[in-house]
Amino acid sequence: MRISEGVEWAAHCCLLLDWMGMGDPETAEPVSTARLAAGYGLPPAYLNKQLQPLVKAGILTSTAGKKGGFRLARRLRDITLMDVLTAIEGPEEAFQCAEIRQHGVWADEPASVFRAPCAIDTAMRTAELEWRRALAAQTLAAIQQNAELQAPGLRAQVQDWYREPRP
Image (cartoon, rainbow, N blue to C red):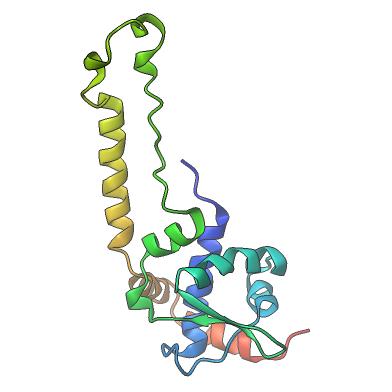
């Protein structure tokens, strides 16, 4: 399984938007896609495309116009990694059993032989469920706290960079 870079970009932007709004989505000013993208050296059009699903999922809000941009729709403590992953990648399960055991040598077996789920399908679904639970237990607020512990002064550095006029 490979998670697209859009998930990483979206999660980073959520942290940044929180730092810029200082934790209050209701009073935060929108940050333009161009500004968000510049801070990470990303192409604005592609970043915008990645953030739109977060708006649809209710994680971000989007304001059009010259002073428009994105801001958080809710606090980081109410957003999980699973929320971000699902918004970007969709809710589909990663593993899709193709029931290959019903082909080849076993093609002539009656359907009753295959009533029980495939052991590989069961194992993969169990593992994916645990992975999804772990992502759902991980809030962006906890991740932000870890980021700030790993890099003291990060919040102030981000706020300073985004407040300075940029070309």
